[in-house]
Length: 294
Image 1 (tube, one colour):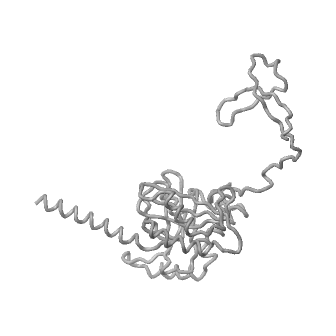
Image 2 (tube, rainbow, N blue to C red; image 1 turned 135 degrees about the vertical axis):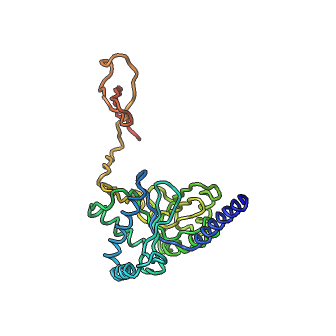
């Protein structure tokens, strides 16, 4: 009798896992969210509030439709929602997917652009528990064939042949070793025209790829470094050109030479510095010299 119960449990376990694999074949779009440790539940609620707030501003018709669905959802079975919490099985990583079948006009890229403009241009406080909020266009089973198919759609949408577009790949993987960065990069190099070159310092587009177990999340993100990796935490400010000091164009620089000595008086132009990576103040002595770089 006990053996029959164990067999039944094993059968139900495999059946549930098979259902999850079948559901993951559907395409999803939404937001990949990172949050503080042990704050996943609060981050989910905050993500719902942020998305619903901006959907009400940008897509008022979809917001009204969402309110009507909430009034009709009196029964717990078969409840239709606009947002769903997709289990990533990774700590501090959340994915909120949008019901694109009922709300097809909602564009995650447009939502993200307006949210980031409020954070960086208007300096508004948007989130408390959420750190990054990355828009994702395609979520699917992590296979190279599926990646090539959906990556081609993104490349044709963003990369035009009128001018070169510098780009860069950001690849992250967790709990799997079936797909590596070199495989993904080789596929992208075959899809993107040689006119567009790779530039990791100032890319116009960042091809974002994240693999969590058997699920892959991809999208093309503009201004990735300007928006500090799509951080929406209060206090994040874009990097401005005025923040970088101008370098004098006189071809003469100050070269600091370290000198070993026992007596401070033996060193000319002694400089006391503090190591920013340490908790205590460290004193070293240097000697400045003018050196012609030519």
